[in-house]
Image (cartoon, rainbow, N blue to C red; front, side, top):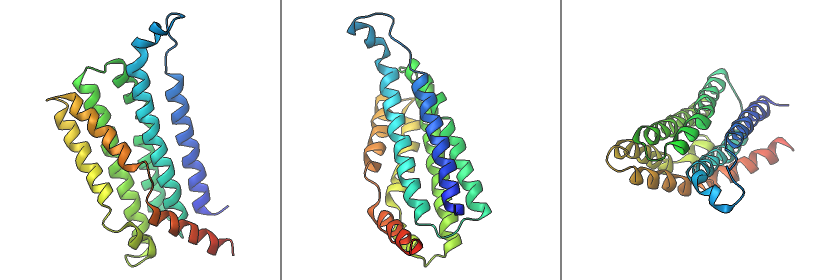
Length: 199
């Protein structure tokens, strides 16, 4: 098993545990009719949004590591930093779901998403630095306009939480939709690297 595959396996395991914790925190309805589900709807919607975000990170992280030729200590620590912020997703998801009208839960949810996005950007930078600014991965990432737009959207959402939290919710959903389709350039590069590695 290569260093890259070990790092990916470890990260996959952490993300799987995070998702498991989130679903275990969903409460059982206090009743046997559909009306009993209504009070749980905010928590369920928060879970769905967080699940989508984690799925996006898992997908893009997979392609990023498969496009990486070598792993060093800096990349490993940057990856751990990303996993730290992702590990806080169940906490902020539950707080948001149980207090959906509150500004602070909405703002903290956005802050965790913002920090996860920043640390993912740092991870990308560490990998590009290890492979060279003229590498195929650097070219595939390009200007990373989606990453920059995401950072700006999260920051704006946190500020708008204290004006109108519905704007914040809309921005969180906007970023999730923006990333639902992974970057095909990195995907193609990862597939090419796999073919070279497998001979």
